[in-house]
Each structure stands twice: as C-alpha cells, then as structure tokens.
Length: 435
Image 1: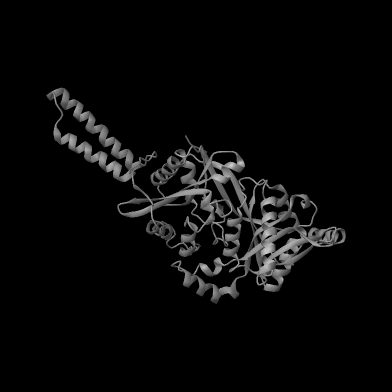
Image 2 (image 1 turned 135 degrees about the horizontal axis):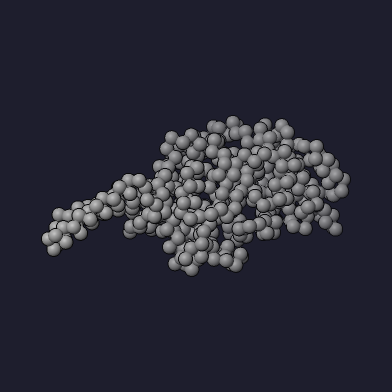
C-alpha cells in the first residue's frame, strides 16, 4: 500500500516544475496539431512516477512472529554509530508483543507497521488501543509507540497516517504517544539530555524526532522530568530536619523486601499492588494494573532488582500490627552493562550483567509513593532517606528519579527542595485530534 507525503522538499519542487513545463508544451501542441503526442504523455508519466518513488515508501503490516522479530531488530538501523544507544534484549521484546504471554493484551490491542523504501527499512510504528485507559478516563484515546524513522518527513507522515487510520477504524479520536506500549512502561521522546545514555527502562531518541512529530501536526500533551540525585549532597538540612520530626511524630518505619521468603513476598506484592493503584490513580494518563499485569511485572523485575532498593513503609495500627502505607522501588542502572550487548542477545545480556555488575554506579527510583490518606504528612521522607542509606552501603554515586509529571507540584518541590535534585533529562508526550 502506498501513501503520499504532505511536505514538499526542494527536489520535489523541481519535479513539479518539470510537470508544469510539460503541460504547457502539451497544451501548445494540442492547440497547434489537435492532439497530444504520445512521447510527451510518456515523459509526464515518468516524471510523476519519479516523484512517487522519491516521496512514497511501502508500509508493511506485521502479521506473524517473524515480522515482529524484524520489527524489533529494525531499531538498530536508526542508531548506527550512536554511542548512547542501549540495544534492547530481543527475547524480552518478543515476550512484550506476545499476545499469549503478556496479560496487557487481554484488554488492549496493537498493530505493528514497518516502512520500507527500495527494500530498505526506513521506519516503524505501533498503533495501540488500551481499552482500560479509555474506560478509566472516559475518553477515546489511541496511542502510537515504538516509533523509529530516518530523518525524512514524508516517511514519518506515512507512518503516522497509517497508525492514525488504524485508530480511527476503532472509533478513537485522539492519537497520543509515544507509549511503549503504556504509561506503565517506557514513554515519551527525549526532549533534553541527549549527551548521555538512557538509564534503565527510560527512553532515548534522536532530537529530530521532535521535529518530525510536530511537522506531522502533533502538539505537546505533557512533559516529564528526570531528576539526578547526587549521593554526596542529597541530604539537605530540610531533609534531616523533617526526618527528625517525622520519627518523633510517627511510628513509621521502612522494611526491605525479602525476595527469598516466598510466602511473605506474596503478601508484600499484594500490598504493593494496592498502594500502587491507589497512590497513582489521580495522575494524568495513569491506568491501574490488573492483578495479572502486576504479577507479570514483579516476575520480570525481581531477577534484576536489588533488595536494598526495594522497601515497604509501614506504621503500627490499633492492634500494634504493621500496616503497609507506602513503598519504593529502585533498580540498578543495568543499562551500564547492557550498552555493551551490541546484538541484543539473551546470553550476551547475562554475560555483561554478570561481568559488569560491580561497575554500576547509579540506580533509578522507578516508584515512590504512599497511600493518599498519608500523603502530605511527611512520611515519604523516610523512603528518600532509606535510598541514601542503600546508596552509601553499595557505593552508588547518584540516583535517577523519573519520570515526574511537569505539573506534579508536590513531587517536583520535594525533589528540588528536600533532596537537592536537579532536572537533567526531559521527555515529551505528543497528541493530536484524529478524524
């Protein structure tokens, strides 16, 4: 299937000018001789076909596992020679798209597309419908994700238009992204911070993607922030003062999760699920995870998680029993090892993680929150302090806290004023109306 681009480049203006000249010649000869010479018709067709060849590419609909693997491996095409590119683990991405193994697809659907020109892959995109999102937020939003493209507006337009039509056919009227594939996963285009590799489970993309998106009619929906917390100075006077007050005023305490105690871990996971779905519910774009989704996420993260970065916040209830009211999850920046796994193989990933684990000097705070009724009480300060203690013990230089919504004033204020955090990366989510 072929689609026309909408942006005209200088070489295309030249082609249009040639057509214009030919039509003038034809009109003149028609008036003079009463018909149109066939050789002029052939020349016009050649010019038109030349324009189509330069403007259009073939959009291929992925329909099988072989195509999915081709879609995944296509990512290497767009980061050749980029020192900040962290290759994905192909086997993990195959699981992500497996509708029989990933519980997300029980309430969502997707379609992958590749763009090819002259037999070469020049772009890719996924069209995504998340039915739970639309049920929870009472809207009709569709998503695009896993976008990669050469720096060619016409190719980008064809990819966006193909995705848009798939979403329209499902009666959706807003196209938002990139979501890879949901807001509980990797999300956004990199907006600032192109000079360093992405930390684990965060996006990296070329700067020109922003231009491709905006030229295709998308507008900013929301910006997301990533903060860098230096272990040497995150303990501000305010943090230490608040820590002392909270300890005197409450009986809250932190407890590391024990991954080896399966019975206790099952209880903790149940509590984490409740806290996560309750604490993040008011956030823009947030969608509660199903039990199956949360269990699958835990199963995925435990092999790379560090128990000292994973802890519960508890208080004693009226019966003097511990009640979970918050939790925090941090992950070692395994991208510092995976960046050397150039082919994206599972064995290679294991090798580099094993041999380079001790060199990892940062971690990412992926989740930190407390139940709504305990927010604004200051108990979250115990979670920040606990991360600092873990960093001291493990010899970590800095932590990344991301992503934070630009209009989440409470979190942005806490990260800036309480733990001396500095924004070092920004990401952008785009959207546009479709009809």
